[in-house]
Image 1 (cartoon, rainbow, N blue to C red):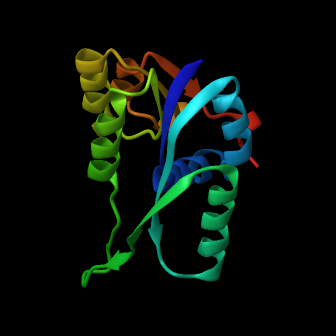
Image 2: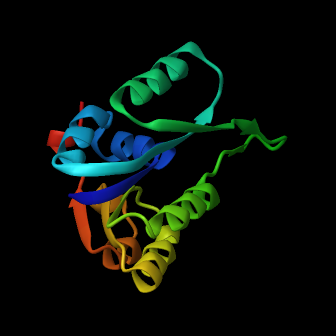
Length: 157
């Protein structure tokens, strides 16, 4: 049975599906599709914690589906901008698990992850599948993946 490790860039998926489709991503539909007949060695959802009830309910939904939710505090800068980037955390966890996984499944459109996928393939022969909104996913990430799966209507609420 194929061993998979799943890494979800929650903020990226939230904003890209909202921007492009004006809809929310369906994590349960994704889970059912991505994990069928596979052994899940890890499934992480990386999110920002603002501490509000709606967000906690969403985080509990992710946990009930099967994700381990990793949170960083929401940081509001003095200039009004916000900080809450999980790129390094995702990359570290993915490289740590790449040796044990046959396939890394990444949900993100962020081109910064292209190097991660290339490194996992080169060092551990780990395949990669990327889920993203095609128009908002970096071409370098699509090219670095062994397979790209477009987020379309069947993966939206």
